[in-house]
Each structure stands twice: as C-alpha cells, then as structure tokens.
Image (cartoon, rainbow, N blue to C red; front, side):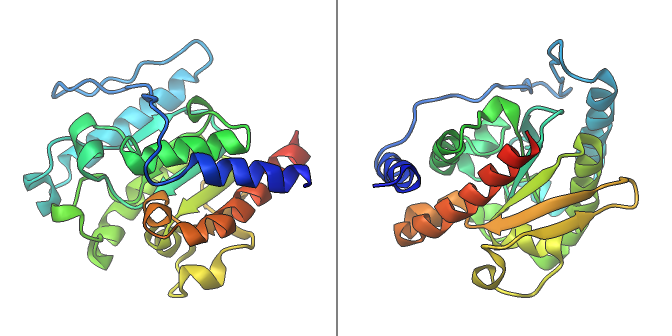
Length: 236
C-alpha cells in the first residue's frame, strides 16, 4: 500500500459518522454585544482592524436572518492564513458558539485538515452567510448575494494563496457558476479581485456535513485535499 492510500484509509476511518475529534477551536469572539478579536504576536494589527470593520458592517446590516439567530458567525483561524476554507452558513452549534464549523461537520473538517498536515489555527475558516438560516435551510440566492460583498472583503484582507470551497453554495458564490459541484470539483479554478494583485487558486469540494450523510464521497474529497496539499508543498 502506498503512502497516499494509507493516509486516505486513515482519514476515512477517523472521519466516520459516529467518531469525532473532541477538539475545541479557539474562541476569538466573546458573547458580548461588542465582538473582540484577540490577536497573537504574529498577527498583522492592520488586518485585525479591517476584519473588525467587516464584522461591524455585518452586524449592522439588516436581514431577516438576524431575527432567529443567536450569534453572528464570521470566522475562526489565522488572519495570515495561506488557505481559506469557505462553507455555507452556520448550523445550530455554530449559532450557539458564534464560531464556524464547531459541530459534527466541524470535527470532520478538523480531521480533514490534519490529514494534509494543516492545523485549524493556521487556516482561515468562514461561511458565505454569517447568520444561521431558520431550521438550517439552504441560503437563498438573494441571501448569498447580500452577504457576498462581506465575504469578498474578507478574502481581500486575508489575501490567501488558496481557497478551498466546501459545498455547492460556496462554489456558486465564489466561482459564479450554475454547474453542479460534481462537474467542477477535482480541478483548479482561479479567483481574482480588483483589490488584489494576485490570482488565488481555488478548488471546490464537498461540504463535511454532506460527507457525513454520504460517506461514499469521502474518497473524492480526499483527492481534492491531496491536490491542495500538493500545491502547498510546491509553494514551500
């Protein structure tokens, strides 16, 4: 068995439906009305200020989604990340804690990161929509468009080298495509911003929540993760 297949089998075994890492992400937000960002010594203070401005704008933006949600969910991880992971919208656990990907899907994401030698503290994790939709329904096209400018601002601030899109909603928002996820995954795309003098390599793959419901797709997800790992190794 080659090393790649061995690591995939380890990933597949560890990321089963009934077994999750008992890890807690760093809580960079308190539960008070004023959200505070705690910067470590390596963080760029200018980025922290800009992200706080984005958070303030999202908080003040009037949307019906705020009525039933408990907490605003913006990001977790590093403002200096090389890789940005973008999901769909907060679920119940995320709404409770005010952080993205902290429920069962988040525990699987932690394992996915670990499988390619990444740590949650080293990447930037966010969603297309920052308030939990009622009953965890899929965000509407209108909601995606409403929150897309805030997401684009975050990309401009973090300025990652790579974007990993988790699920069809994130792919639709960032790649502006009507194609199904199965038709666009497994290949590299590019994201460009008028505010950045660089091209960000982007790949779309399956959302961890979908993988929990449909474990047969974990092999394809693993292939996408390996593509990211290869790019990271080449850059290093």
